Length: 439
Ligand SMILES: Cc1cc2nc3c(=O)[nH]c(=O)nc-3n(C[C@H](O)[C@H](O)[C@H](O)COP(=O)(O)OP(=O)(O)OC[C@H]3O[C@@H](n4cnc5c(N)ncnc54)[C@H](O)[C@@H]3O)c2cc1C
Image (tube, rainbow, N blue to C red):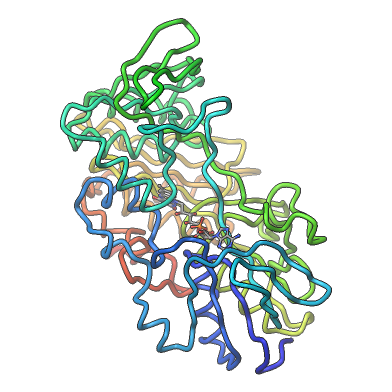
């Protein structure tokens, strides 16, 4: 329990998880000061548009902002931009920051993740990772019509950028040591189907290959691969994942061995909670620890972490979230929910014009544990509900087959889940299920 007033709650990180945490404190009638610090100088920008609408130019930077500054101020939430947390002294409940020492009654660590760079390849103009609006706008400026973009890493961010860059007229080559794009999450068949979608849009792949050297002194010029071949590059995007932003917690006495270790209540220490991409927590729903790097998880965790921070230990609520993400590539929405089981059933839509359309169900001991939907928004809405209760695989498959046979391809990104990336959208913890279908 926190004192109602005093030093207040400090949230480190003003992105999805941090802002949801701050707002949840006010929703729970917490009356003390709420201060949110962020190392970034500008107002908080949402990250999904960085590979989509902001990169394509469909949205301005203002449209990609997470929150309206006045609305936050109106709720008594002070956001301090350009202030970096440098260290934590849990014994005295103080933070060392770039703007001086800051005491707290409660602390929410929401520092997210940092994009990984390519080992052994030094920074230079034209070489990008994608995590901030500044990264996005600089990359966009390099993607003039006909520019050659090499994307290193065929994961979700890499493949979203490939789709957006093709829309801008760039020549795109994707390099990955694995044989199939996005295979780790989508599986081989669906990964291959999406590879065909990208190939049909003119993306070139160099799969099963690694980068040896990035040539070019004053800016990137050529990417040399491990078979000795060379790919010309006006710009290079490195999309090889992210690591939790815990450097500043070194020596603070918290376990940051692989992300900030939190219990099932998202507690990391006395009056310290964690939320979002930085957190590795025990998810009681699956009886396993997990670190999830997706928007909805960050939003949900932010709110749960803040609520639990205000409660006495015996009253805290276990945080048993069902992981969820979406990805938009061309006019296809990919959605995934749950945790992959050991039995896989692929339900193709049978759409000859859109062979990638399908729903993939996985389960364990006959019960549905995950759903992947490609270009199948309406079935996914139903499947996501089924994931929340112990639905037999056979029943789930029957429902999905029926829905898929009548579903039309949704090209409307507002249909399901997209609400979460709309500017200024505020996600209530109990309202994360996309809008119910009308059937
Ligand atoms: C290009 C891109 C596209 C994405 N697209 C999707 C998508 O389509 N669907 C999906 O589900 N997810 C997507 N994601 C993932 C989603 O955006 C993240 O899961 C989400 O942003 C995590 O939020 P967070 O609050 O945990 O951390 P972050 O968004 O990483 O924010 C952490 C904040 O903490 C600040 N910070 C870090 N260290 C310090 C410090 N020491 N002191 C002060 N401040 C600090 C940072 O400046 C940052 O603002 C995408 C991510 C990226 C990068």
